[in-house]
Image (cartoon, rainbow, N blue to C red; front, side, top):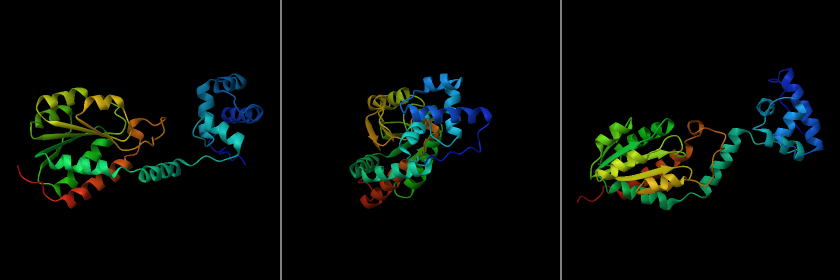
Length: 239
């Protein structure tokens, strides 16, 4: 059974959805360009109408129309993704990261947008279990001024697509610092940028979301495990 949310549809949207219901049942593989021609509107209007009707996009609408299966609500879809992330969680990455932190006297954290907030939270937790000098840089210039041969630069990013970290990482290594990038999603460009690269999940968030719109839940899960591991390891040996 197909449940439509018509409360947000204006008359034009309603006409588009009604036409799609008719044509979609006849042709389950109806392309959005063809749908737009049939409805006498643009492809963006088709996409907007089905989204307002409660679907994540045009493909989702067609899938539900042909199968009768209702889509997962966004919150539920994210919970299902997180279950997969936890099932595949790489505990070896936690140990590798914790020991990398232990080997450095200075820790500089960096990120943009929500990832910067994660970095500040991680800084707070590191102060509770590490004797290293730990700080979060608010911008790239500040980060550069903090780095030397005893430093570890930790860059947090969900996708690595918002802005390049190449220049910052290059300057860090020129100052003798180690660089580790932690991203939720794999990005081959990040692999070339850092001395160490940790990828937290093979289960991506929807591509329709901008990097700043994606959740940081996986980051917090990983960082809390790192803090727990650092407490187990105890103070790093001097020298």
